[in-house]
Amino acid sequence: MATARPIRILLAILGLDQHEAGAFAVARLLRDAGMEVIYLGRFSTPESVAVSALEEGVDVIGLSCHSWEYLHYLDELFDLLRSREIDIPVVVGGSVLSQDDKNEIQAKGVAATFGPGADAGEIVQRIRSLAEARGTA
Image 1 (cartoon, rainbow, N blue to C red):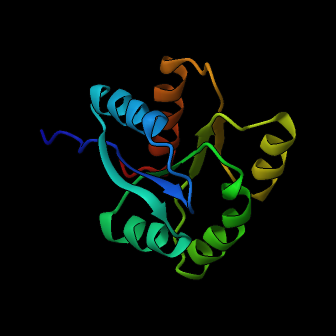
Image 2 (cartoon, rainbow, N blue to C red; image 1 turned 30 degrees about the horizontal axis):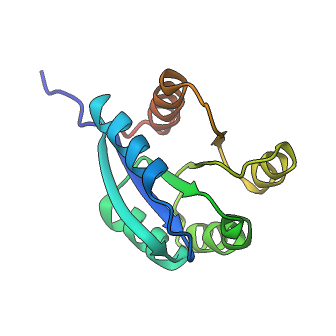
């Protein structure tokens, strides 16, 4: 019997945000949970995220944010994903997620949000359930 491949998550930081500590912590958390993490790093663009998501065959796109820029770039990212017929859930985590921001980005199509103090088990389970719902993991 063949074993299922690990869940693949693309993790990136959009725009000029330089804060990587949270992204590193989440990457380690997901890796330790048996997932494969492809980390694009800082200064990613919506275009590089969309292209990499397609090329890497990921199950979930994770965006780490510490500044406001993700609010600006999400529309472009979703437009690029739709234009390429890429149906991959996008999750956003970071320290600047007010309730208003969460409501706004979820209305745009973000599948899940995680703010400061998010439970590690909840993050892993939510990523796992989003990937499994796609039927690719």
